[in-house]
Image (cartoon, rainbow, N blue to C red; front, side, top):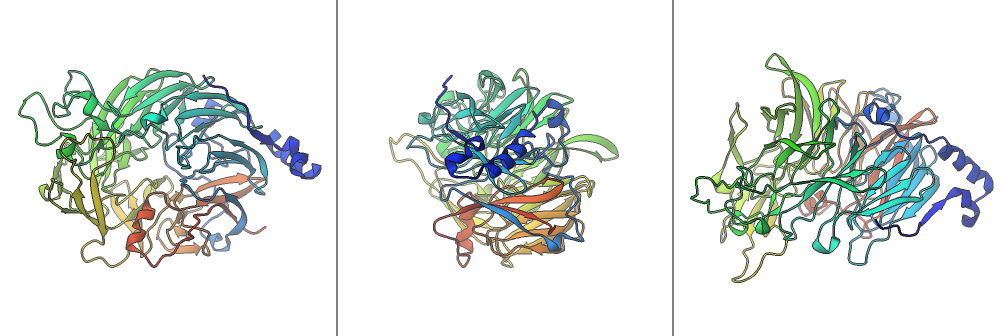
Length: 582
């Protein structure tokens, strides 16, 4: 275990800032009230807290606060803003506990702010090596008195929530092998569960999930995301040896079912994407070998204490179009075909929402959203998909597929409101002319998807690339859809006040009526596009809505379809916090 020197700045040393002692006392008072985050809090968070990536273990991304509602959201105004490190990349989810908001800058500067005023309480700088790009991590975790931060150079670090002092630092993966963290952990039953990415850099055997001791960061267990061994799963890689199996990134935090004590997490696609380059095509003649490439594009059900893989469900075998199913898993209990079911609901880049039974892995239903030409049909009993052979890329050919990278829905999370029993989904409509990049004779694969995506509008497009879709999950019907030209680039945030918030590429933050889709409020133009995860919290009895403005985080690639939308060249990042007037 590595224990580098502490680099935190705490307001008890406020005179070092030249800040008046009364300010320091005020900030000390806020931080002094921060309580340890217990297992019970994680199971049933206080309404005003946002303690994990999607707020609750079930992954809903829903706020039970209702001070801001349909009737008054039109009065929403800026309460305060905080300038973050410009440049780099961030897809930040602020965490909030007892009125203190914790954020991470792209440079891995971690800061604690007064949630009511935006004043700095403490900050800690995790020093990134020179060869690691300043790209932020989407999420963090809180447990007891520790803020758990995952880093781009493969460390888990624990900071004291009150002081920002380093408690422990555990290097989990080797950055020199390309491994990294791009999302934070989920903490359940006293175990930190972390997924790795960087598996496209030709590391043998792909990526993995790890479980860690919350008191030390020590690794407890490891689950590989590429199947191995002489098993049906291990023999699903078309006879490719383990050292030549790549991909299966675990780059989004999972959900947790406390009744089963299972973590449900998604796995990305194989690398390189082009199956003729990866070796997944042509299909082997061996009857004991398949080319499904498990566990790519799957949900894994993992015992949180032991790391045992209980079961899995694969949504898209042998994905050759970068359409991974790695995103949030929503745990929702609803009737289906007259029977109450414990569902796990998710969707991949292809934009097809799918539900499976989270106790058995049984497939239940699917709902298409964005225009797509990849899946011709879905077996209504098994969920097995028939893939359109005309879209599968082959060396020497260019294929036309809808959607393609970065997906009809990307890493921007969907959210579920129990108030309306509706899923709110940010989507974009576009297609691609996809061309393989074959290896030269004798060239060894070292990284990347080996494909070029030339993005174009969908056929007969109305020009409205961005959408917010509302899907009633009791019967999988469309409740409403909002459409606009600028891509929708943040996750959705529904609240008990009947409002759904979302951000866009053209620097706007918007609020919708959760039942009708009527636009209730739109911010002025903010400092940058909004490619992040909005949250709601309370401080001092007042409800706030927070979102980070930023760019260059995935859907920014769609700016090629909207060149008239101009963004600042220095890529500023700003935390904006909105509230009703006093």
